[in-house]
Amino acid sequence: MDVKKILSIAGSDCSGGAGIQADLKTISAHGMYGMSVITSVTAQNTTGVYGVCDMEPDFVGRQIDCIFQDIRPDAVKVGMVSNADIIECIVNRIEKYKPEILVVDPVMVSTSGCMLLEDSALQMLTSRLIPLAALITPNIPEAQVLSGIRIQNEEDMVQAACIIYEKTGTAVLIKGGHLTSQASDILYRVPEDEPEEIWFHGKRIDNPNTHGTGCTLSSAIACQLAAGQNLETGVAQAKQYISNAIQAGLNLGTGSGPLWHFV
Image (cartoon, rainbow, N blue to C red; front, top):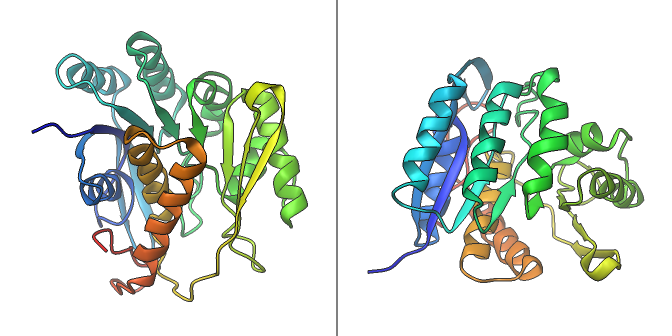
């Protein structure tokens, strides 16, 4: 039996809705084999993040070595990396092993509004890790940090995506769910030196339980790309999957609850 193998490098969510746990559920739901490198352990639930304990960078590196030296992944997704030393370790391994597909979800702020990325790590993330990726998937708050501009509408999303691309040279999917008037995402890339803006318009789903949506979407995209889909189709298929997972209406916890990944 031959299956696609997906590696998630991210933080652990003990409540199971985001991070490594959401990634592995998403990968399994796509019929693929999930592997994990844990960058940090968090104390969190649907109401917020109450503590973060980072792994030692050397140990993060050892985990990555064990994966690539035995079961080489077909795609890699990087999520929560909270300090510069861990990012540098990941960058060194990515440059060494050169995975065919890398998707980076630049996790900076949790769904509940908790800051998850140290200030010292932002420069390392922008200058070293993101340029290695095929795609990055910031939400509105993260895109504002990466671009340095305030985003209030679709025109601002385009401008921010352009700025991020110019900084990193990496295709950008800005998720518009934080804008109250819409639920549209923009994929910005520059194939053959011609800028391309692809919009994915969707209806806002009336469900406050969206814990782990960013983790889930980026993992789903990695799965789609590993399956051979092009970037546009892969994003579209992943967005449909996450819409279905939200619409399933799972209701757990007293805060922003998780999705139903096995929809």
